[in-house]
Image 1: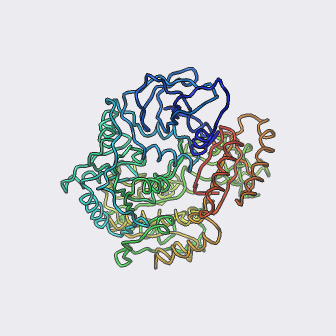
Image 2 (image 1 turned 90 degrees about the vertical axis):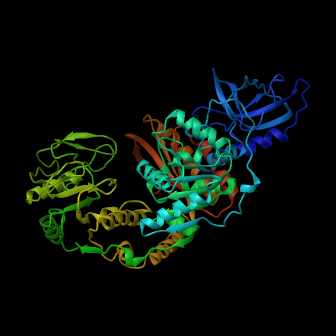
Image 3 (image 1 turned 45 degrees about the horizontal axis):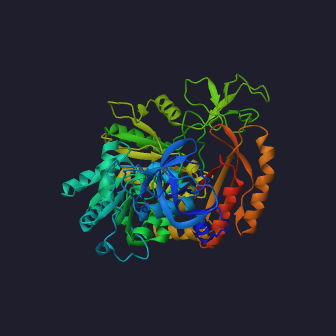
Amino acid sequence: MKRLSESVALLQNTSFNDNNMSRQDVVNVIPYARLPWNAPYFFSYLIPSSLPTLHIGAWVSIPFRNATLHGLVVSINAAHETKMPLKPLYGLVPYMPVGKPFVRLISAVAQDTLNHPSRFLKLAHIRSPEPFMSTVKSRSSYRRKRKDKPILVWWSREFVRNKYIIERAHAFMSAQHLILAPTNERIFEIIDLLNKNKIDAVSFTSRTSQKEIATLVLRTLSGAPCVVVGTRAALFLPFARLCAITIDDEEHPAFTQTAPPPRYHLHRIVEFMRALYQAEVLTLSACPSFAAFHKSDIRERPLQGNETAVDIIDCSKNNLTLNPLHPQVLDRMRSILQNKKNALIITAQSGYASFLKCNECHYIFRCPACAHLLSRETAESDELICVRCGYREAIPPFCPHCNGLFLRFTGFGPARIIEYLRSQSIPSGDLKSALREPSCVVGKVNDTIHGLHRPIGMVALINTDVLLARPWFTATERTFQELTKWRMLSKRYHATFCIQTSVPDHPVCAALLGDTISFYNEELKLRKKLSYPPFARIIHIIIPLPHPHAESKLKPQIDALVKNVKACGFSSTPLIFVYRRKIKSMAFSIRGDESGNQKNYDHIFQLLKSELPARAVIDVDPDSL
């Protein structure tokens, strides 16, 4: 299994002396099928003499195993002698060719993210049933001098974001412009904003029909000027002359594709597109990621005077295991309700309770299969469930360790907080409930608040320590972004914003109260010292174990792989056992310097392809080790 460049070089530089060899043109094709990540990058076929001239990016019909598939031409080797018995391809398919830039894009991205190019073909929906035509070349008049770095607009007021979107759309009206947004709701908001300013834009979302996708593909391939507003899947539209890329809310987790494969991150794809198309990149964010802050030129900076004031409530001397809300929060909530406004409580936990604990011997109920905490989903549930492997058991009447009868649920999810508030005679409900009177609305951190027309007087975020204690190296970054999101919501509704925490002197709290730029610089220094992204690359590997004997067979092979990885100058975490989709799996991470030699990365990727089984799950640039 050779990589794309190595395979092309092998076919070009190989000579044979066998008299039985024939001299024919060889074409390399990527099948339009979902192939495993460690499959060959392309398959070679002979070009029949009756076939017209082929071009890179054309679609052909090929014999593949016991079926006939369509494939994309990635390279052509003219008049090469071949010794292997290659099959001839069947003929051309009347689909529009995608051009060399798109072929180079999917090939480079597949190599960099350890995916197969066929997965990006399936993701792009580029097979347009149009008559065959020649590939559209990029016009030199639209080639602009590429900036050394992308531009970052760190906005603190929404009209600043809208101003830059409109200005960019006007500046690139005669070219192809891609605007990326994290959610469908945000896409429709941008479409409405552009239409009000007399700018025609095309949306590309999960709701776009196949007919509309075919029309959009025809428009992008022909090189016609257009403004495309879409989600991360719009990255793989076959643009002929893309001149500008605008990313809205670049820190949003929706820009990371993890399941189903291919697995990639938006920042990686944009870097390749910026190099191939010579496009200008602009990112818009109210709380940018550390990678964008480090690799971009900042044009706008937040104005601290226009931010909503944050009230940080110290809970280090309060017992929050019995009462989830601080007395100050309860007093403010009652005063807000008396003023005929609603209070919004945001929690970092889900379900009803996190775990069950014995009050006498402090025994905690854990899963017998994976040792994970057993939680309770709802107040009416009579079972404990393991969210990792799916194990269930009935709630016992006594402690199995000391036969104690005093069992207590610990942790407050949304359902239990609503139960607690009602015990305090405070009307409450979740975000989906239709409450007519002023009440307390309870939601989760990852909930999307859209179209909320209730008058909000206070937004309180509890369980902040749970966010800071997540086992990710990005826990501090993600917590600051989530708190900023709710702070912006409080500003929109002119509500007060308060945070409950046991560590009020944490750098995240200091950043909310003071200079945010200093917080970013200090965290980047710490990441550089610990060799974390964006100063290093992390590859996370998970190998499912479908049967009990798989561990004993794979462990010596994985140990040898880890030794070879360390010999190349990379570090590796110890091998651990996790559960993925309720299946026991082995997992470890590889970490290397971002500015290291590219040949070392190529060698590591080749080792992973040759040593790991096809069922292995590989995540490049994950959020945790």
